[in-house]
Length: 413
Image 1: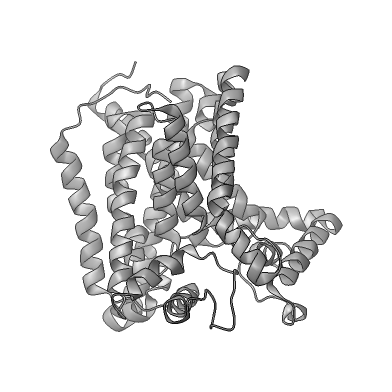
Image 2: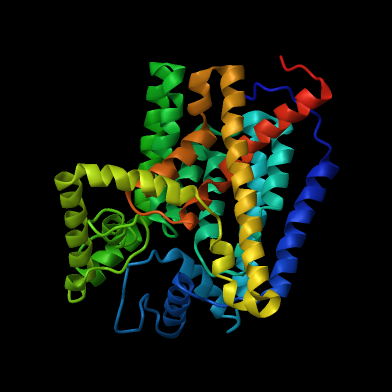
C-alpha cells in the first residue's frame, strides 16, 4: 500500500525524542508501581513457576494444562531462571513496549507516509493504558508486539518476497503461542486487496494461505504436545469453548462469567467441546437474543479503557487513594475516547481522499475490524480491544495530519 497523502520531512531527531519520551514514561511507571499479579496474571505466574520448578506447563506437576496459551508463561519462566522477582517481567514489557513504539511508526510510515508516522508514534508513546501495562504480567503487550513484527515483513516492499513471507508466517506462528487468534490475520489482510481486482486478490490470498500454513507448522510442536498430554490435538489452547459460551448463553451479559457447574468434572477437551456445542445451540435456538448480545458486546468492547488501572489497582490505591484511582480510570478512558473518535475521523479522511472503499479496505481498518469481530462473536471486555491499539493510533494520526493541514492552510493534492 503506497502512501497517497502529502509527505512531510521526517527529521530523525523528532523520532528519537518521541521514542525516548515513550520509553521514559514506561520506565518511570515501572519504578513507581510494583508488579502485583491479579486475575489472569496470577495464573501466568503459577504456570511459569511450575515450568521452572517441574518442567510442566500446568497448575502443578500433576496438572498439565493448555487452557491458557503457553507463550506468556514461557517468556516469564525464562526470567524466573535468573530471578525470583518480577524485574524480568518488567524488562520483557519494556522490550515489548519499545517494539510497539518503533513498529507502529514503521508501519504508519509505510502505509501513510511520514505525516502519519510521527503523530502515530506520539499517540502510542503517551497512551496511558499501554504505559500502565508495563507493570502487568499479561499477554497483551507481547501479542501486540508479535502482531506488528509479522506485519513488518508482510508484503514488505524491500527484500526477497518469499523470505519476507516466511518471516511473517514464522513470527506470527511464534505469536500464536501467546494468542492463537493470530491465525486468521493473514486472511484478514488478504481481504484488503479485494478492491485491487481479482488478479491481485488471488495472489494475496495465495500468500495468506502460505502464511496460515506456516503459523500452523510453527504451532505444530505444541499441538502434538496437547495430543500427548490431553488426549486430543489442540492448536495452542483449549479455552475457545469457554470464551464462546461466556458470550453466547441465556445468562450472558457479553463479558466474563463463571462456567456452568456441570463442566467441573470434565476434562479440558471435553469441556471445550461441550461449551462450544452449547454456545452453538444457543445461537440456533435464540437468534434474536444472540443478535442483541452481539450489539452489547460491540459496546462493551469499546465503552471504556480501565483494565490497566484495574490490574494495578491494589498498589495504586495505597499510593494515590480511591480518588486517584478513579482519576486514572477517567484519564485512561478519556484518552481512549479521543483516539477512537480520531480513528473514525481518519477513516473519513481516507474515504474523501481515496474513495469510500479505501476507507474500509486498508490494513489498519481491516485488522481493527478483525479483532473487533472476533470478540463481538465470542466474549468482550475492554482488554480485548488492545490488539487494535496501534491501528487505531495510526488512523487517528491520519486525522491529526489532516487537521494540522487545514489549520495551516495547506492544500492536499
